[in-house]
Length: 346
Image (tube, rainbow, N blue to C red; front, side, top):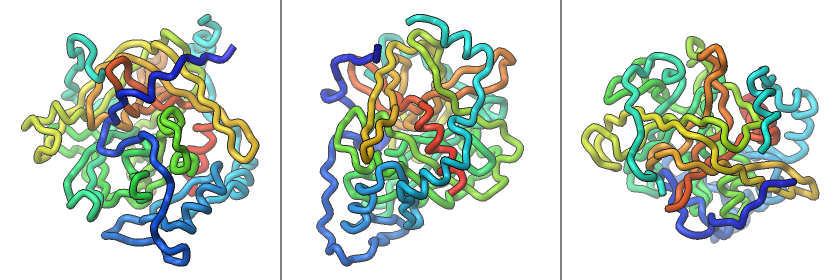
C-alpha cells in the first residue's frame, strides 16, 4: 500500500535558501523568436526554450544552454545500469522492517574537524545571481558524489520565478569559519531536471528538488564520495550536515562570510510517495518528512547515514524546505539515481 498522507505542504512552507519552491506559472514575456537572455552570466530561458523543456519532462537542462530531450535521456539510460549503486547487507536488512525549522531545543552540533570524513565531502556553495539579486551573496550546501560532481537542491541553482540559472557559484569542500582547506573552485556547469522547472505543484517541487553542480574533472580525486541509495524506511536514522546561515560567525544570514558546519541527527518520521506522470509514463519520487533542526543555508545538505564500517556514506535525501510542523527532503529513488547518473556524464 502506498504511503500517502493528506498534504500539509501547501501551507506555511518556507524554503531553505533564497528561492521559493512554491507554485509558479511557467510563462515568458519574451518574444518566441528571442534567444536565451544572458544577464550577467545567468542563462535565462526564453519562451521557446520553456516550451521545449515542458515537452521533454524526462530530460534536463544545463546552465550552458543545452536542453537534453527525453529521447536522449532514454537512449543513454539503456546503456547504464538502473540504480547502479549496489545495496549493502545492512540496508537489505532495513528493507525487511515494517513499517518548523528548529523543533524544541536546538540540538545541532558544530563540526570543527571538517577535513575528516564525511565532512571533507560536504561543500559550501556560495553564489550571486547577477542582476536578479544585485550581486548579494547567498549560500547553500552540497555533497560530493564523484571527482567532479556535487549534488544539491535544484532551487539552489535555478530560479523558477525568473526561469534562470544563478551565476557566480563557487564550491568550497570542508569550509570552516573562513578556512578553505581544499581551495575555492568555480562551478563549470549547473543542471536541473526539466520536470522540476515544469511542475506547478508544491509536493512535486520538493520531490524533484535535486540538481547537479559540475567542477573540473579530478577536483575531488582525494575525497570520499557519497553513494546514492534508495530503500530508506520510516524510523530509520538520518544525519543532515550543512552550513546554516544563523550560525555564521558574525551572526547574520547576509553577513560577510565565515559560515560554519553543523550537524543534526534523528529519524525519518514519514516517507511520502509522489508519482509524476511524464509523457504517459509513471516515475517514482518521494518526500522525506523529519524534524531534524535545520536553517536557511542548509538547502542541498545531504541526508545520509554511515555504513557498518563507519566510513561508507549512503546518501538517501537532499534537504529542501521546512514548515512549522515538519522539515522536508527530496528522497533518493531509482528514478533520481538514474537521472543523476546521466547528468554526471553530460
